[in-house]
Structure formats: structure tokens, C-alpha cells
Amino acid sequence: VALPLKISCASSRMAFGLDPNFYIWVLPLVLLEIVIYAYAFTSDWRTCQVTLGLLGLFWCFAALWVEIRLEHVYPGFNYAKPQDPEMKAYKPFCDFAPWATCSKVLMSPPGRFLRYFGIAKETASDGIVDKVRNLIDVPNPTLGVIFFAVHLFYPLLLLLSPIPVLGPLLPELFFLACCGVGLMTVWLASNLIFVLKDFCVVCVSMYVANFGLIPMMHALALKGMEVKEEPFFGVVPRWFLYSFGALDAVMGVAVLVLYFKGAHAREPPQYSSLPDA
Image (tube, rainbow, N blue to C red; front, side, top):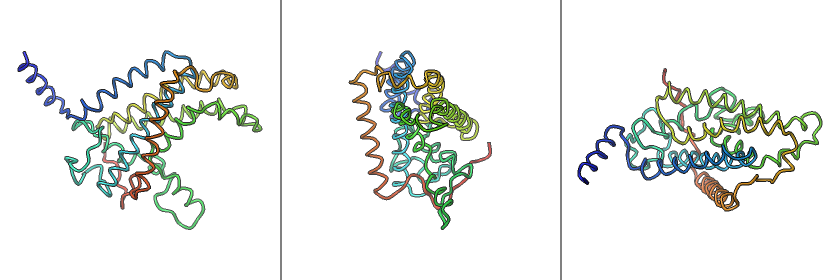
């Protein structure tokens, strides 16, 4: 019985090209993530928001760690033609098959969509506007950290409600922001499937969270300022909230330490463009 089982497993790996990263990291994380999503989507809206905020922060910090680590090990990493195709010096946990290389996806031009669309600028000049454009030239996961952190601490946002005109509209405005993130997610996903022709478990996990937050935020927007009357972190079990929050905090600190060691997240000498679809 053992021999056919070994043969079957070996043929499966050959068929799908899966490497140990899939079994050691990706599969356990995805299974755990499914359980967390199931809990979030069957909970009340605020609890769902907190849970997705925690999960989104985890994946954003994981993505930033991978990007910065790649720049440390492979300065000027070329997503289209890596200098070390087998990634012997450093292979991210989310690279687990020839068709699933998060390193390629995260380091591709859409990975900094503000720069991709000309909003941000890679180099700063003397002008104030150019300096601001350079300041916001950050990887998408950095923007994701801000986005998911606002969801996690959403009641604090509502403290700005006394601001004239815009204050009372904050729930509706943030719902529109979530819709905008959803549209950007559709664009990123289309690039992933049709242009890069790859799979990124980190990216897809964030996509699911982004889409899940849209109906949730719509419900909270309908509640308006009543959300302030609910428990700050919903009814998320405290053991889960504190442990997951601590994990996110440790990951965030680790990313900052890695960043300030020298190599910034994807700042190559030249910024190559996407290949033709």
C-alpha cells in the first residue's frame, strides 16, 4: 500500500509542479484562511470587518517581507528574467510551482500601481509636488496596510464625524473607497491572469478580503454613526484578536527592521514594463 501511495504523490507533484513550499507553507495557510473566512462571513458586520482587517494585514506584511527580502538578496530583481531562475539564494514561501510564483507577480510593474498610472514618481526633484509623488511611490501592500488598518480601527475614523460637511459622510465615503479598491483589485487580477499568466496566493488572498469588505462596508455605511455604540472590535474572541493582532504587530516590526537594514522594497535601477498580453 505504501509504494503505490508514494508513486501517486510523486506523480501528482510532477503533474502540478508543486514543491515543498506548497505542503509546508501554502496549504496549511490556505486551509486556516478558509476557516477564518468562514467565521468572518458568518459573523455580524463589525466582527467581519475586524477579522478581515487582521487577515488583510497579515498578507500585506507577508508580501512586503517577500519584496524587501528579494531586493536584499537579488538587488534590482528582474521579475521577467530573474538572475537566479531557481531562486537558490532565497525562494519566497509563496513560490511553490512554475505557474505560482509570487516573486514574479509582486515585483512586476502593477505591484506599484500608483507609479504604473503615473501618479507616483520613482525619483524626486526639487519641487514639492515631485517630492510628494516620490513619497507615495510605495508597493501596493503598503497601501493595503493603511486600508486594512482603517478597517480594523474603523470606529476611530468615525471620531472625525464633527468635521463640517465631510464628517457625517465618512461611512459613505469609506464605502466608496472600498468600491474603488474593488475596481483596482479587478484590474490587478486581470493582469495576474491574462498578462502575467501566473498565480500569487498572497495576492489572491488579499483580493478575497478586498471584495469581502465591500458588502460589509455597505452594511456599516447604512448604520452610519451607530457603529460607535457597538463593541470596538465586535465580538471577535479575545484570544483570537490578541494573538492575531500580536502576530500582525510582530510581522510589521520585522518588515520595518528589514526595510531599514538597507534595501527598500523594489527600487531597481530601471523599472521594466509589463510584457504584451
